[in-house]
Image (cartoon, rainbow, N blue to C red; front, side, top):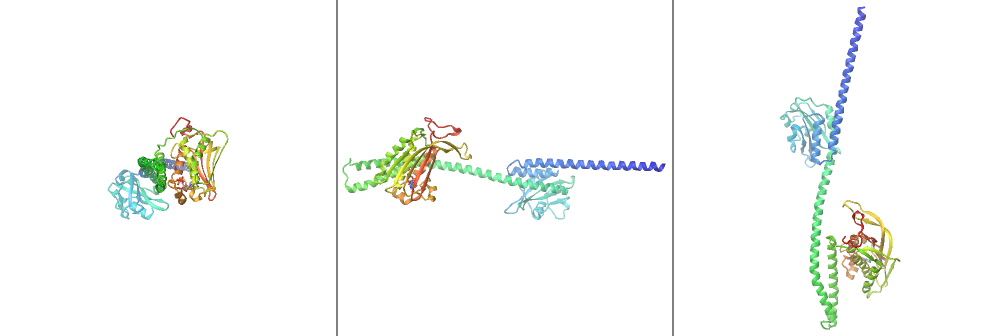
Length: 481
Ligand code: ADP
């Protein structure tokens, strides 16, 4: 009977022991899960602070703080290698190592130096006893334990992150190495992002400063051109006036030789005046001082007027000048003085470049066309809006323009065929001004050409005038551009 009781007691004791072990294992598992959950939470917070998009200094500080927090240490730090000299510098640090920031670490005789040179993590339980002979200042600061891992970017070691504990804190383990390695991967990405961000911020600031400089230079140039043009125009007008007076014979009859000298003098003075007027207009547009006088203009009358004015250009040329204007009213809200100037430039170029026997035709057609909408901000991409428009084109049967010369057509002082242009006495500014005038109206200008078969210069004008910001249309009488 006694042995039955003994067996029962033993079984009971065994049961209690097994239950106790199970409870202990359960408690250990719960503790491990809690630790794991805390680590995940720390990682979540770290990721958030690293991805906050702060500048480089803030990111490095966040990495050092994260290194210390993650392994529950007294302090955390990050060191970076100089890509040129290889020198190792403490980029950010917390706790007892906070005073090291900005200091260089010796490659020999420091844990971070050893880690970056060997590309391996270091786990040190007692710095004063380590056989690698580290002469770290942390021995003096009371820091005894250290864990350091290398930082790698595209296979290259760029630095190290580490953490320290004092003698009264537990030693670091391999789990801490794994945690810092995971942090290292994130830190490298965050540092690269911050560097790119810093770089683009600096580039943007540099660009803004350059823009301001350019604007100032442009303003000074325009101012200079405006003043110079005014100063030159007055005496030039008087030279032309007196020369014409002499030519007319009002100051006494001229002999053949005097007349021969006077004619080129007047022609060249007029050319100079045209150049000065063009420069003045260009300076005004550049300085934003060109005011458009907008009003509905009858394009039929405008075209016929320009053709009438161009008759004088045809003197001495054997050229046909014709026009084809669509039936019905053709009205466009514009500054008719400027549009007349553009059309006159197209026609006079056609006359200049088309050899005798050729034809010049001015066409005007109503159409619906996609036209540019003004941008609200400099960063806006160009938008187009289909609107009722009038297409005005001047075609000639002249020599045409080579495809490689086409992009230079609307650029300052760009005469694509200098021999003909020199002969014809152009300034190389006419088409530039045409483009500026048309663009001021928010319209489009262009040219097409088949070398050997002539050219067509055109402009596309929306019937209701320039489109303003906020989709408001400039109506007659509003004025200004
Ligand atoms: P320019 O005062 O020299 O005529 P423009 O700006 O009006 O200046 O024209 C620039 C250049 O474009 C001209 O010098 C010429 O080379 C070319 N060009 C303009 N119109 C024509 C045309 N109808 N045919 C051929 N080339 C032309």
